[in-house]
Length: 267
Ligand code: NAD
Image (cartoon, rainbow, N blue to C red; front, side):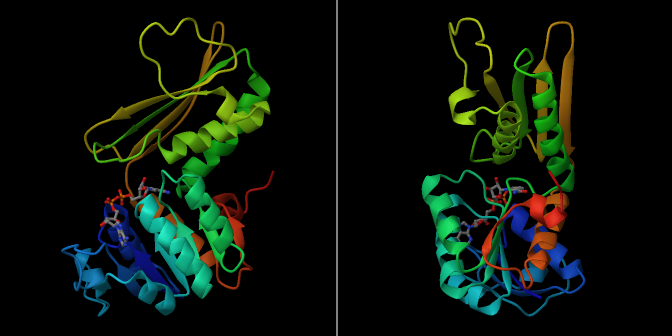
């Protein structure tokens, strides 16, 4: 399969390039970077320390979509919006890892899903997708007597907060409790906030150093506390998951898919 990589010189883009180069049945077809990037014109594979593959990084993302069966996108929300429109135009499958997406971006992905297979995940690691299921089940069983707090920590460069994974965990526990996350989430606390309200789903965000991604869902009850957590120690887990998703799109009908679909989770 011909795989294109947008944002291929970024932290994740480089990992994805290495993962595609090492994957059976996949090859790097094209890659793009932001206009003005010093990576433009460089060989994609060489950028990651691999032997050159002869594919030079371009600024025109349309070329990437035309040259690929599937494109893997770990960029920024504005770029992902443009890439969703290109998926709609070309029918090329799109795997989206970018986080911090708003309603406008979601609408563009929904529109693209009418013509192309789109896989979107806040977190492509298999471990995180397992804890999403566990957190949902724990929330269902423990009920509102247990206060839910979601704690995440990431490296100092991360642009959005809370992380897409923390929000996905919030959605999972809200589903387990059959409530709307928008109604129950408390994204910040400062000053005289008063006692915690029953049923709140709290978020706490830490930023620093080179932390790749730590997430914990805390269920705090009277006399006990349950913690469900995940710590990523290498970005390669996200890249491997994204490549697996890209390979999975082969022959797939247009639609908006999740890692649950790719991994074949039931329930
Ligand atoms: P990064 O800043 O290192 O890389 C982003 C790259 O995209 C940069 O090289 C930038 O120049 C490039 N870019 C920006 N606009 C572009 C455009 N229009 N065309 C082409 N390239 C463009 O960031 P990162 O750490 O690699 O993270 C990227 C995104 O992926 C973030 O939203 C992050 O939260 C998300 N992420 C998701 C997962 C997951 O599993 N879903 C895992 C890690 C990171």
